[in-house]
Image (cartoon, rainbow, N blue to C red):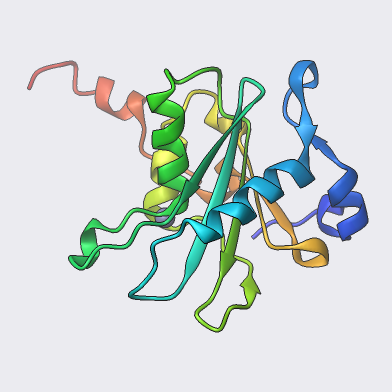
Length: 165
Ligand SMILES: [Zn+2]
């Protein structure tokens, strides 16, 4: 997990602007949206609530985890945010995603995207520049998607088959 100077304190993180300069937003606003999604989370089996906020084209797309009694059908907050972005017409290249999580004891915890979500995020346009934040205040950590999923499987791998299926 990568950390850098952006993760050293809540004051710096709260005042930080993220996203492209032409339409950047405060990191604290993305955090607020992700945090608010904890109330929407449907986590009655694990009690592990997750909210996410995806920034793309200056707009914020929220997401929450939605668990299912058939556990494998559960969708994470990160993928929920991606579907929200897609259903809005996939505007822009997603630039930042903030993830907020509370464990079953109600404690805020640091939670980087799971493997499935890393793969979905890696298929987004411009994902080599996508920044992922999680945690709170001094515990907030940041990583780029290539750091989280090096050597990712992607569209280029499919084209190597030459369309012979
Ligand atoms: Zn996930």
